[in-house]
Amino acid sequence: MNYISTRGQTDKVSFKDAVMMGLAVDGGLLLPESVPSVKDRLDELSKLTYKELAYEIISLFATDIPENDLKRLIDSSYSTFETDEVAPVVKKGNVYIQELFHGPTFAFKDVALQLLGNFFEYILKERGEQLNIIGATSGDTGSAAIYGVRGKENINIFILHPKGRVSRVQEMQMTSVTDANVYNLAIDGTFDDAQDIVKAAFGDIEYKKEYKLGAVNSINWARVLAQIVYYFYGYFQAQKQGAKNIRFIVPTGNFGNIFAGYFAKQMGLPMDKLVLATNENNILARFINDGDYSTKKVVQTYSPSMDIQIASNFERYLYFLYNKDSEVLRKKMHELKDTGKISFSNAEMEKVRSEFATYSASNKQTENTIQTFFRDNDYILDPHTACGVAGAKAMADADYVCLSTAHPAKFPDVVEKATGKPPVKPDGIERLETLDKKCADIENNLQAVKDYVADNV
Ligand SMILES: *Cc1c(COP(=O)(O)O)cnc(C)c1O
Image 1 (cartoon, helix red, strand yellow):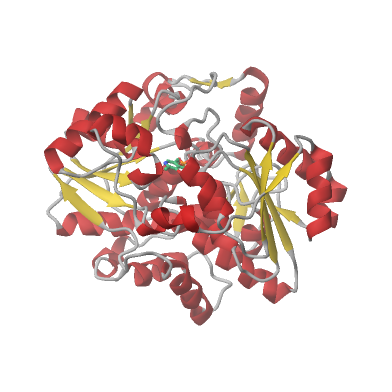
Image 2 (cartoon, rainbow, N blue to C red):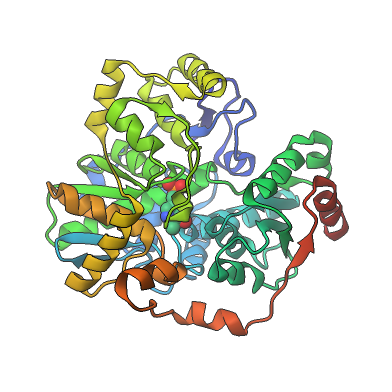
């Protein structure tokens, strides 16, 4: 399987090259050049364990990795999860909750980043190359990325976080990783400052080349690929528990998670519509309801990992919406850059609404949903998952599988507010307080970060 760019101005690349490249050189996003169908194999696939299923799906795309190597990479990626099921489905009341938070950092990003870290190590070793990952985080991505590459050969990771502005659990999850290849930098500034520094470092082509900089952002195809697997698994598990007309409802920020669902559907998973759940940052909901894709100011909510206005994976969906016409897509992406919005025709919106529905939850609804779901089912939702469950409850016109993207103990404040008591911490979070920490304070400027990286690679 080869990979093309949504913008159509890059040569085809192999899977391994696509993983190492992240973003296509023409500024587009990479996609497989065709969509493999498993429509005739659903019965067989439904009987597999998570790891077996992951192999069957991923091997359709990672065609340049030999069978035994791929099996080993998948096995070691998901052996770090606290259950062999990896992404189990539990039925609570009339909602199916697919728990994606059983990985090392208790958030769904582990499903993708455990695999991506192993792919990086494998490819770098084969090529005799080195990679220095630099990223900025406001919370979950940083810790999941660190756990994805800790202790791996030929990789260093530098994660900038705004000092004192990430949650205590998130900070400890990052700084308690003391492996020699992991560098936490607490920057004296905001998340935007940290992100600007990272962007500027990548923008310095000479520096980027000399220090072999790489990224782990959500646009890497391998991340989407890892996520396709759990839609299949979740569908089959819900079906076994009696679900019929299955809709997935997905707490969404960057459109990465839900795009994986869209792709699973294109591969032949017979799900009904995908439902996109957002918080008060509702650009994607406005798009689906009103055809209005225009950026607004980001507001802070109880579900910070969805406090996003530009959905970086959205371009992959637009490519399909525009019937794989890269020229139209390029025009639209320029329109977005120049005017802050994209407009859609009625025909396009009809197509969008045949594929997606949406629900936006306010902070109040998020809190109420955590409260009533706990009262009725004795089950604690995290605030991201609660946005999805709020939608499932409000719509109630199908069997909903709600993707649960984080463990509630990562967001104890709103959970305590809603339920009257703090969530019980799993051992992996409880233990964080007692561990040694590794973190350097750093000035809020590009040169300081560049010097730090240069001194440590
Ligand atoms: C990242 C994240 C999301 C949003 O996922 P996208 O792929 O950006 O849509 C939702 N919930 C949690 C807990 C996250 O960490």
